[in-house]
Length: 247
Image (cartoon, rainbow, N blue to C red; front, side, top):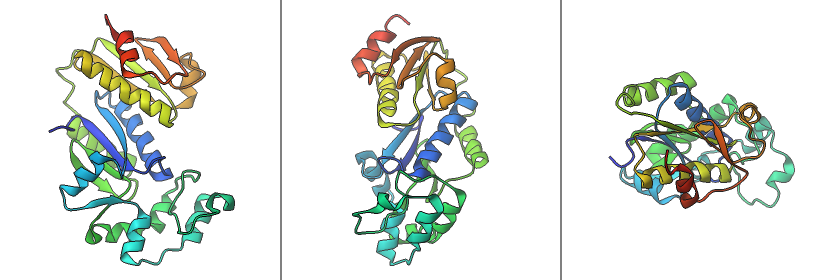
């Protein structure tokens, strides 16, 4: 299977608070479990996301899309107030938005959006955020608990790394911005093109408290075997390949 060694979070671009929180949580768990897998955040409009949902006769979409299609009355004003969205963030928007990127995730947000989650599949919509592990949908429409997500990851990949001879550890440091995600994904492409998949482990570090400890004061940061090789640059695939040559 093409994405059997990957975890996908299908959401919005830029990530909404729920997608952002889930992506960070997955990265943390992958590091905690010491897994050599790739984590991808895909926009629900991305070709891979559309094709993946289409294989199940679904289309990926947001809570807003579900509410509109199902004519579900949602108290958007309460939702916006709950997550603390400034009024100016909504100026000029003709239609209600479920949770813009300026908001913060909270469990209550999932509860308020539950009516959309419960009706999404019957309306033919794979509702964001969607958690796909090893090519299989494990959760959609809300943020699953950390404990449940850890269990899913352990079941899918708990013994997957037993035969991997890791000789190089590459760390990509960034809080989750587009530039940091670009470097993270480019690193996987570089490793793949060099044929180093079974020798190189790629780790995404999103905890800002760790950045300074590792000598990175501006992100994206790239560290190879403990040595900082790049700070504040969006490295292209070929640039990362050159840094990895000889490892």
